[in-house]
Image (tube, rainbow over all chains, first blue to last red; front, top):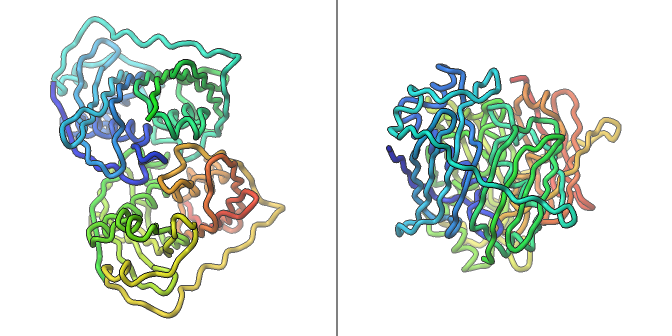
Amino acid sequence: MLTYKKKYNVPYYESDANGNMKLPSIFNVALQLSGEQSLSLGVSDIWLKETYDYTWVVVEYAIDIERLPRFNETITIETFATSYNNFFCYRDFVFYAENGEKLLTISSTFVLLDISHRKVVHVEEAIVAPYQTEKVSKMVRGHKFGKLNPDTVIERDFHVRFNDIDQNGHVNNSKYFDWMIDPLGFDFLGTHVPEKIYLKYIKEVMYGVDVLSRADMHDNTSYHEIKTASNHAQAEITWREK
Amino acid sequence: MLTYKKKYNVPYYESDANGNMKLPSIFNVALQLSGEQSLSLGVSDIWLKETYDYTWVVVEYAIDIERLPRFNETITIETFATSYNNFFCYRDFVFYAENGEKLLTISSTFVLLDISHRKVVHVEEAIVAPYQTEKVSKMVRGHKFGKLNPDTVIERDFHVRFNDIDQNGHVNNSKYFDWMIDPLGFDFLGTHVPEKIYLKYIKEVMYGVDVLSRADMHDNTSYHEIKTASNHAQAEITWREK
């Protein structure tokens, strides 16, 4: 199991009104790091596309947060693949403060997508061998998401923007998070921080649609759905006062 | 006149569907660099706030683009203050490719804002002396913006999101650009790139409002306004086929 790490200074534009690093930026920087590890091992995203016409797609995240990185803080981010099976590859990202204190851990599940056929494919040995991790037979059991109560749900719709679309031709997966948390409102988001997040991507969102973000809060846990005619993503977030 | 420079590799999440660096990201990275220069000269944004209760605010940009930076390209960005007068400070940012080719130039106009009183103040010598630039009596003449034709204008409204708000408590100035270009649509934005941009910030946008983005296109130039009950920003962009 090979670990890849780098230092990162949190810029102003990736900080929110509270001075904390934005969650979409946390996902962006984490994914960038796994891309850098792949490049360093000779199995870059470009190689993957040119050789197999495949791309890595995140399907699930589970995040434990002790404390969010702060504006202008220099953090260290580590990533390592933990295991894989026929269809899923598991990878962790750990964010540390300068004094070595653990800030947050992201556990992620990736699949390989055939770009032209838009479907999930078997994990090939040649693609994952360089990460030096173990093939396991069992699958990590996905989180079972709580249901939203239609009597208390808050809804808000969002238009997909040109700058939400990435080079894969769909909405970048970090964007969902802005849609999800926004219905909770400034008063809540200005006084609370997440401590546990489960996030699942079900179906990609393309340009030209409006998505409906549905949120429902009970006992410091918020339940989220991103919908069009289909379900695109769901999440569950446990909050604490900041 | 002191120049500050650094290398920057364009990450995936700052690239658009065309593989070009997003314009809001270009502004973000540029402003981050001027903040780093201020820090290196002992006049950081934190010092400015603690000593004077002031913050730097951009009021105008003029951008000339030869070519946009590309995904995964390593660029060099330089910034230097060019001159100042009683109210305005002028600063350029120049982006270069690895072979030294000039990619784009941003000319910017900054003012100093008194944070508590929310008003523009005189430029103090002690604040600008470290940049070693010249005080001039004349003001740079601002661009005169073309009018939108009500018969051909396209309108789209946008809700201000929690993650649009920065530590200054208002919408971060890079966000306006997403609102401005979005009404032009994917077909146009997927086949055209900007070559000249004028952008003027008139009044800050706070949380909880919906803004109206108005755009009007004639002869490869688009004219833009961001409005609520007030005018918040205007822009003029000349496009070419990519």
